[in-house]
Length: 493
Image 1 (cartoon, helix red, strand yellow):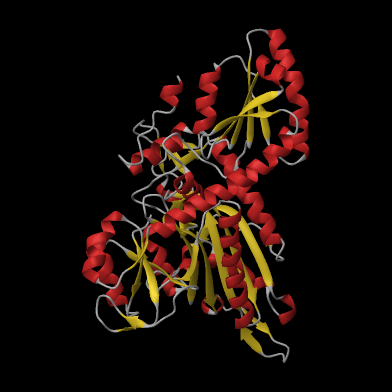
Image 2 (tube, one colour; image 1 turned 90 degrees about the vertical axis):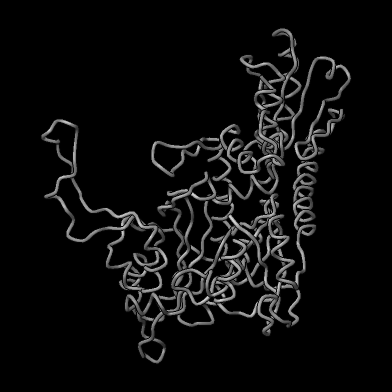
């Protein structure tokens, strides 16, 4: 049974297949009856909940409040901001009718042609339009600002090629929408939120990211600027893990949202929006996991420690349980989530493989002989190393070990990214090496034409213009024209 649990395709053989198998075998999610949509299973949702709770707390520390807005958006709203509707038009799911009726031919039910909506409704691909339609009723004076709102919701984008967590037709996310009296305040909030995403990625997901600004071609539809955090997956592809958009006054003008300033003169409001989604689940899997299954950072693991007893009879189990319960109490008091798996419906070998597959950071195995020796077998998931450690002080040892695992998997991911980041000045060299994956630091002349040429010829895109690092001007590797600084080019998910 244990061999079957571990029977994943190796990453080196087929990375995509490895990922798809792992999502299902680790009990994270499965395909649903609706094309392109998934069912997030309890274990997968528990990881998402920890992400959600952590981010929610980080948002609220900056004054953000949660609210909820409608799932359905009038089509006329979406059309008010030209760039916005153009950016999302091909992905929109449209509600046209509100009733079904029995088919007179006896084949079930059909759409009632007499129940067509007067105005078609869009299932939200994002909520800027419905929210700014609402803010018009909330904002009248400078005293009403700023508005700092976030919503946890689902959205739908009719993707043709889907992959669980990474790109699905329906997905879960949070979207923040802020309104400000000045351009400076809005810009400061835009940067503040991308900094929060970067801190969350690095401190909780143990995932190193590069902060940068998107090119005009890659920025959010209707934004003046899009800030991004870009992460490298183990196959060398980039993944956009979070974005924060400075929307300027575009949506305020589209929905006529004005306020009376301190001089009692009307001004349009300044806006930003920001969001991350269940795509972070895919990032978590592909940043750390191995051929044995998930490797979860302790700060996001639903179960941080699992304890498995080895026994032959009830008397031995009772003795082990009496030893384990005080340890569990001590761990729980320290904020460590721990599971004692004394169920007799699975053999120990099956349990070992199952928890390894699910990425539980620390496993303790305890038998009667261990109790006699005052020791316990401990295995850390990140390295698969086993050791026998004293029972005395085990809770404190585990607390420190969890921090060590968190730091170790971050370092491993950072080392991997650094080893696959290349400075490249030759377009021919770039084209020859891009199939191998990685981040390429290249000079670019800043034009959409050159950007589109690179994408057409190599399937790679400009992931971001980094905010930190080498700012030395140079010449574009494609055209030889002046370049302000190096940008990151990579293939992406």
